[in-house]
Length: 157
Length: 104
Image 1 (cartoon, one colour):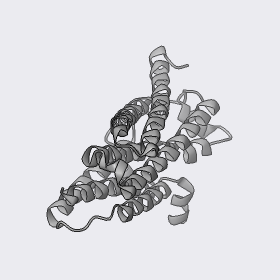
Image 2: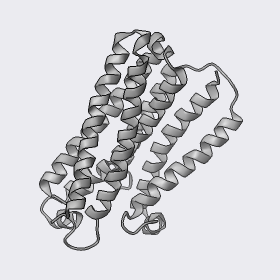
Image 3: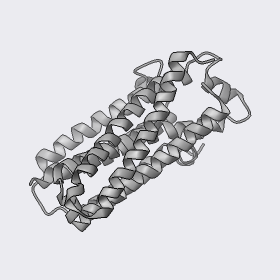
Image 4: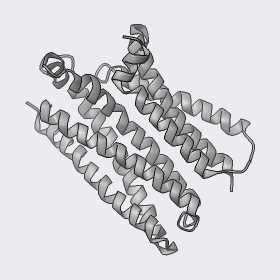
């Protein structure tokens, strides 16, 4: 049974994911309206996405430490002893790293947005590249989200 | 504007992802490497994979930054390079693929 602190951190971990998804909407709106005055919306949306994914990773690492505790009561031990060990060996193993990849991608996108400023909204190639990178990061985040929800459903912490 | 800075950022991001993946495969292949990567007992080898993966990429990126010259920057090509690196990195942390290349 998880303590209230662990439950609260798990909740924050999920809630930050919602902020990440909402900020993505702001960034996409800014990128598709093609006007220079949308730069602020793009900048703040990307900044919020970057901060939230970094916090998601920090809280995730904390929860992961509890998940993989060496005692037989930990979620990892229970999963490995169950009929569905692949939930850990395949799904969780992938999820651990996917979140880090998204953070690295978001740091790059944030850098590009700060570096090129409103040129991103005028230059077609720049804009398309940012859209591709954002969508790749978003797909990976959705996958990570789904895996997190499934793993928690199969074996709560 | 300096293109080198932007290129280096792309190189750092791509290499970080790939090196984290490579360290993950190496940890699966060897118990000694797995122990070496365990910097924190709570997190296990995950701690070393992330830390060393990023450190190695930082060093290579610095070398790249100081050894490369200003040249034309085609963001489309660099984005493609990064997306390919992302796909490879995802494969490197996908357990069935690791078992396939380690022939387990």
